[in-house]
Image (cartoon, rainbow, N blue to C red; front, side, top):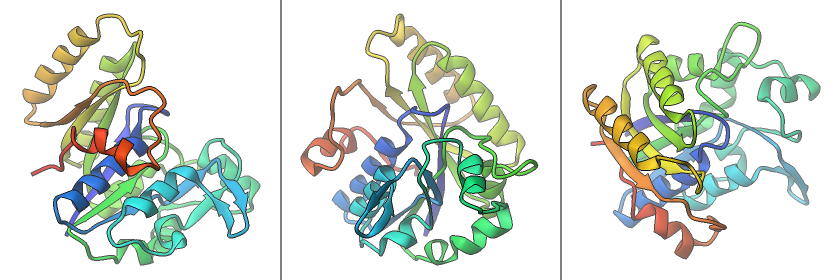
Length: 232
């Protein structure tokens, strides 16, 4: 089994779209894959309980599919920082508690295991621990999704250097165009490519801006899945 922790340069960098596409890519290539969203804030009440749209994509494109709670053990209603939403729900988050809560998901044995973070790399769990500490405790390799918009070079380089400073390997990065009106996008992409290349970090895909894509529809997500690959 190959385990990866997927993080982004910021909120709305496209982590879930790329996560779903990688899970789908694995299935298209004949591999099993399991998607885990440990904490999801911003969820809707349904007849089956709270459900998060991002986590539902992990469930939909995992192969094989497990019960929802295995894919997303902590589901929070407010669309706010997870540690704040958890506190409002009476939950205390920590690396230890999160590891215990995710035990069933982490125990899944597939060709690929993909764990998607929340927001950026240093999203808090509490006053002293972050999701980055959780990834470090798992000794997971990291896939970094870079949202292409103004400021992405600084965000990407800072994030990658912090990941490495915490002792983890950046296994690859994905460029995701989230601002169709970004000036000098190709120049930014060129700089990032050579910066990561010098560090031996491969580009796992470059995704153009896809307006209105419905990732729940496999025929639409296929447009992204055909552009990305898993680390070697």
